[in-house]
Length: 229
Image 1 (tube, rainbow, N blue to C red):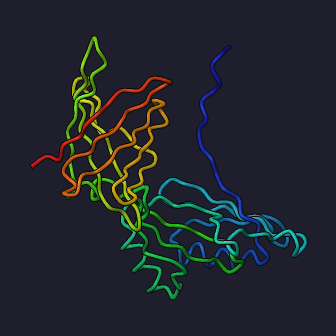
Image 2: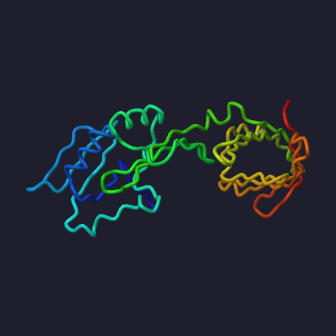
């Protein structure tokens, strides 16, 4: 099969009830620039921020404006470098913060605002580096028979849950993503979807040792992690 041509950009389009009001919000409040509108009267607009585009289209009928924001679902996600600075700029511009700042279990710090039509805009900063500065580290060796793999598990709190990364020292694979991790009482469980692996273990009373089993693609091995001192 021939490779697909390169995808050069992806641009969201929001359907709005009042085009000029929406332009005023995204340019005056969210920092987009160079807004251009087309139509007589204007019915479509494009604007830019940091090389990224946003399209706005005026609805022909009010029923066509159907933001997900009222359900608590994002209509637009903006990955920003400094969410605290964005929050300060929004507040200075008179925009109410509907939710946040919230540190999530997937290591993002998020705030959410609503545009005049109720579209929910999430502005989020990656805090994975920050999250693991004070992480608890546990070392273990996975004995696969013909070879042994030294592993380092790094676990940190994030919001109401936990985030984690795994280093496989002998494979020179560092900061492998752990997609889901839960700690419920003395039971720790985590999953790594990309490699089809999971772990279930029991923490001792001092939380310095985790006795469990590593499962990967139908096979299972005992694995003990010991907290680094």
